Length: 472
Image (cartoon, rainbow, N blue to C red):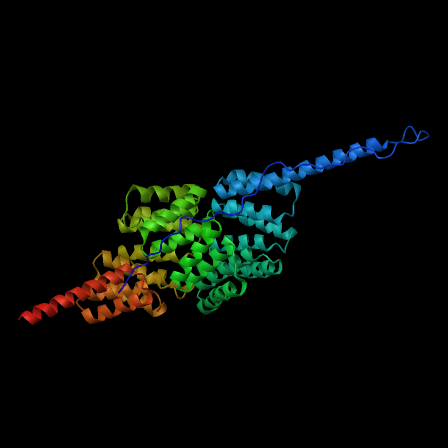
């Protein structure tokens, strides 16, 4: 029996370790064991005075250490809560005291990236790497900036270097994150086989290392999604959340998986949990909007607006906003959002696909835009699947089928394209061919409820026809 993805979320997750943040007790030696000799130099410091000075120095050192630790701890707290400006201020203070502090620089870069200040992040990372070229965590952040602004070759180079440096530094959580980003950049630029090998290495890592941290488990879960091992990915996300219920990346990753598999209710709960930790996560607000896309309404629009208020240069949010405008036939609004997105990332395949779709809806030539998109990402079948969508909603069914076939030709495992082709063929009355494509889509992704429901309907229609035939 066909079943959609139904995975219960474990709400009784255990919390991570809670550190006792009370002031540490100071244990200092007091008193003098020998008397000062009567014939000593009156100008020489007494033993009591020396001990007092030593105690004072110790106290000052301890206090300074506590203040430094408190600044670091407060910075992490502010960053985790999404208070990005406070986090930047606190970590900048820490950097002023310790200019080569990799953790502080990485945290500043995280805050800058979260708020779309990519130019500032790039400048800061490059300056820091001139001083500390072996800082793999900072190099990873620079790679993210390159990827977000469409410089994928540069991003791949930085991710490769970061991965090697972090492995050498024995930082497995950060190393896995950088290795995953490397694979995703390769995937996007058509290096699919190499990317797949990297994704598969995460499975080996899991069995060899038995990781327990939320960061490691979340990266493994994302790799499993790329490998289309969706149930395993879901289990891994759950394990990550059990390891740390406030790990926002795990909450968002799980929610995105459930949205992709049409389980909108459970997905919304993950997003809500993430926003309880960080109400200023632009990605979380975008996820809420994507979750509400079919439903539409004020919550969808508010979520997009909130995401872009936090990060005005959030290309994914601008792309969704443009797509909704195209759905509504609002070409001026779509053009503005597409142009803004391409200014941030001139090589975004998703945004180029939307521009091609807008040209199609305006009955303009699309092939130049198609060529530009495929030059960036040769196997980006979503380009033609997006065109198929807009052909469908404007009732150009034959063209919808043609676009879906082009999608499958360059991306055979794009199961949504098989479904698009199957639905178009069914609308054209080509029942057997249409059913075959829908079956292919369902075999490739058994959690696709649209494919499941279509096949159930076709079965019902066939049963009805057979029963009527028996009556004749």
